[in-house]
Every structure is written in structure tokens, then in C-alpha cells.
Length: 278
Image (cartoon, rainbow, N blue to C red; front, side, top):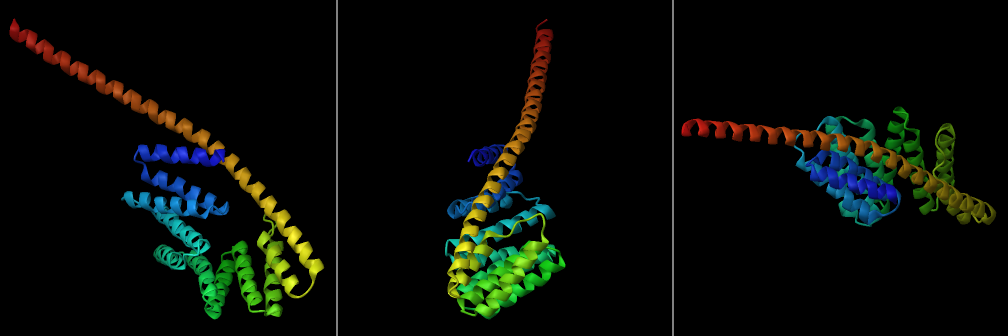
């Protein structure tokens, strides 16, 4: 909570200094933080405000366009969670346009993979699975194992909804194998929840209970990681405050110089007037 408040303060300061790009960057971080905390309405508000501030900066760099692509992707994810499928589709399309413009093969596949959830909700399972399989192939090509594993889980969930338990098992197992390859990242808690649903559908209540219990434990662990990110934000805030103090000091020095120059000009005028009176 403290970290989020600090980030809000940073945003206000950047806006006051008319540093729209920096304000937008902070808003992107806030939007992602709120999304991960499942505060979807707030995530949407911050992401939309980020888009506005990027629009106020007329000199966006290649990296800035990447941030903007990220924002539109987050808006797509957020609107999907808010059940606004049309808005989600529109935002994903904006993100895809930027991904194509930037030549981002991985992000193109990732965004399409995220948009596949909309197809699945609408019952367009074949189209959804096609997008997700492409995401898996491209993610593996770019060694983005986590992204590939996530798409395996989504396809498994589609087959589970279709009551195709055999294929659901295959895709869930594929996701599990990929997660085991990543020694630096734990298994997505969503895997255990989906396995619990599969076990329940197969009538295996013992395994369903085990997977559901593991899901709850891993979900709590993930929240602990999010809390550690807030501490990192506090450290970033301290560094920013130092930089801001330097900016304020420079501005103060400039004001003193301007005042000294104004006094010097007044003195010269006064001296001329005195000479004229002599």
C-alpha cells in the first residue's frame, strides 16, 4: 500500500513538471501493479491515463512505443476481466498495430494469445487454439518459456470446458514440464487450480483436494512476492527524491541568477538616470 502511494506521488510530481513521458511510465507500473492485485477498475483508470500522457509527448522514442504497446495489452487484459469484450478487442488491436510497427514478433504472438481468451468465451475454440499454438511456437523460439507454458494452460482449459479430458491432461502436463525447466520461476498457481478442476471432473476427489490446497498455498506465496516488489518501489522512490532535490536545487539557483540579472539591469538604468540628472 505504501509503495502504491509513493508511486502516486511520483506521478503527481512528474505531471506538475510537465514530464508527461515519465508520468506515463509510472502510470504503466501502477496499472500493472493494480492488475496483478486484481484491482481491475483502478488498473483500467491508470492505463487509460498513461495513454493520455503518452499522447501529450510529441517525441516518443522506440522504447516509449514499446511501453505504449504494453499499456494497450494491459488494457485488453483488464477489460477482459471486467467482461467488456469489445473494449478488450479494441485495445488488443491497438497493441497489435504497435507490435507490427515495431517488428515485435514475440509481442505479436503474445497479444494474439491473450486475445484468444475472447475467442474462447465466444465459443470460437478453433481460432483460439490456433492463436495459442502460434504463441507457444513463437515463445519457444524466443525462449520465453513462461509465456509458452501459460498458453498450454489456456488450451488445456479450453479442452476441459469441452469435456475433452484426455487432451486437457496432455496440455496441462506440457505446461508442467515447461515450468520444471525454469529453475528461477515457480509454477503458475493457475496450473494447480485447473488440475483441481480436471481431477474433480474425473471423479478423483483426493487429487482434486491436493491440487486445490497447493493452489491456495502458491497463491499466498505469489502475494508475498508482490509485497516484496512494493519494497523495491520504496527504494526507487528514495532515488527519485534525490534526483528531484537536485532538480529543485538547480531551479533555485537559476531563479537566483535571474534575480541577480534583473537587479543588475535595474542598477544600470538607475545609474543612467542619475547621469542624465547631472
